[in-house]
Image 1 (tube, rainbow, N blue to C red):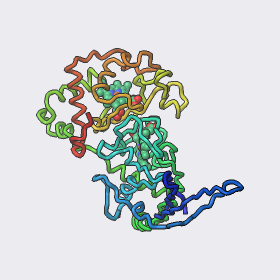
Image 2: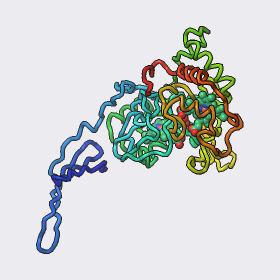
Image 3: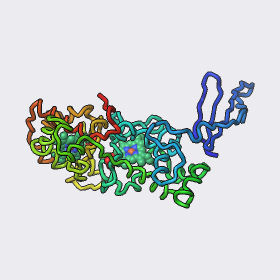
Image 4: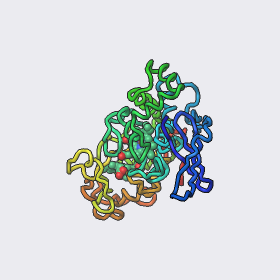
Length: 360
Ligand code: HEC
Ligand code: HEC
């Protein structure tokens, strides 16, 4: 039996220990003042009761799958919402990659187990099927490989993947589900395969932009967004780095958010150790960007307008960037109207399922 956590009810002196496997042990520690000092009498095992609500707690999001999973995608979906993949049972993938907000988080830095703050902003994990690598610094090559990082990260889920697999094997539901989907017991590889398969279902192309492109009818997105698209392609130079179909060329580029002082995440350089990569980050796709605020690897911009103002003149915000891309060498000199048009265009990239989710 593995101890999951202990709650100390201070005023009463009662401690409640929750054990993995769905059991709770309530015990009381009495500290009795004897003549020769303190003797601690532990009245253990006062009550052992079933803690069944911890087990198989139904996932709450309306996005999550709640039936009996029969495909690897469905099993992956259940696992994506499974908090028991974290050391203290409090965090799932969906805690940070919130489905309602384009599978990104709404804060600059997400909190993992025991409220620990992460080092980077949580990006969306939708539209990952065509990506050649993952994370802002590209440290994982496949979606399967990626899964292990958050599970084992001490600031995220904080579980050796072998322990996560052990937990799954102790649960009869998971054993049955893995047997029926993979013809195997839960293991590291099939756990990764299931979650990655679910992530590959998160492609989002039911957008006003796609409908506009198909029908070639500007009424679908409106004149402002049509002008914004032109600005995105030409004057703003956005398209040089954010190209279709998912609005990313999957390259590492430096847009000036590294000055070695206040802004000191060196990005791709941490992995490649190649000096040219200092301050380069993976170009993120822009689908659903209306609902994935805040923006950038450090979550420094709260709104799309702030992002656009930054690109208009990065030096106003970060005066001495190291190694900034030549495309951003000169200010864009966008007018107020042009900035509004550019934003209107970005808003057409939101999938219908996230409509109305914009945080303002
Ligand atoms: C505590 C918050 C947190 C949890 C929990 C979490 N993630 Fe993430 N995720 C992040 C952050 C932050 C990043 C970006 C880190 C970086 O680039 O260094 C990220 C990046 C990713 C990426 C790469 C996205 C891209 O554009 O390259 C994928 C895919 C992903 N996470 C999937 C998952 C899966 C699957 C799980 C559950 C097994 C999970 N995450 C759990 C915070 C979290
Ligand atoms: C030189 C390549 C380059 C150009 C040009 C460029 N971007 Fe980016 N963009 C990036 C990179 C790299 C990031 C991620 C930087 C980071 O996280 O620190 C990014 C991030 C963003 C984000 C934040 C996405 C998120 O989820 O956090 C938005 C929005 C964005 N760009 C829009 C634009 C717009 C609009 C333009 C044109 C005005 C533009 N970009 C021009 C490379 C570029």
